[in-house]
Image 1 (cartoon, rainbow, N blue to C red):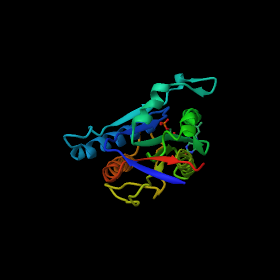
Image 2: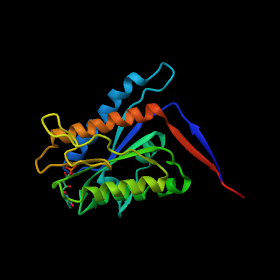
Image 3: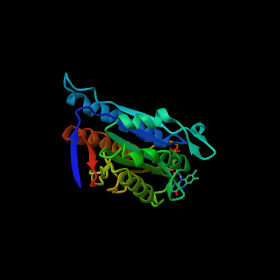
Image 4: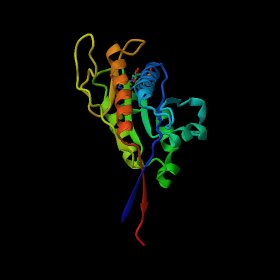
Length: 213
Ligand SMILES: Cc1cc2nc3c(=O)[nH]c(=O)nc-3n(C[C@H](O)[C@H](O)[C@H](O)COP(=O)(O)O)c2cc1C
């Protein structure tokens, strides 16, 4: 099998999230903002401005269990990287997120998202609430699409400037039993945004394949 690697200059990040109570949304927005800020100095006069765009998964777009919002899916088509974000519900992503993921199956068949970068973010009310299971699902989903996984590279750090409180390597794992996201988790989300900007600065690649006869 011959594989042809194509590199593109333009890049943008889609942050796809479901959030019922606002904590995942808060983290997703901080991540997106940190990406856009970190990417701004990387923009050249000839390249597109690198921006992150948040794509909320709305319950109103789910009909009889099926997610139907082609415009929202198309945001990912245009992006070079995607962040998959959902609260952990019963040890996995929320059903609303899964409905969105299932709606990407035509793109899976067309290899439309292959070669994009992907990262994950989840929230829970408990530090031992199987957050890792949700991140593992996101990684599996990314692999099915042929996307390239970006792990959480920052180690656990305690203290007033701490981050990655759970020492997660798979992605941003945040937990709070309060009404808002924890400051350390907001820093984790920002770090992931910065990391994705740095990743895209190194290389933005799309793959096409020539299958054997
Ligand atoms: C149906 C349901 C199931 C949940 N399951 C888990 C779980 O398995 N693990 C956990 O840590 N938290 C669990 N939670 C708590 C949520 O993950 C947590 O409140 C999360 O921060 C909510 O995110 P949001 O504010 O973005 O909606 C669950 C909440 C609901 C409503």
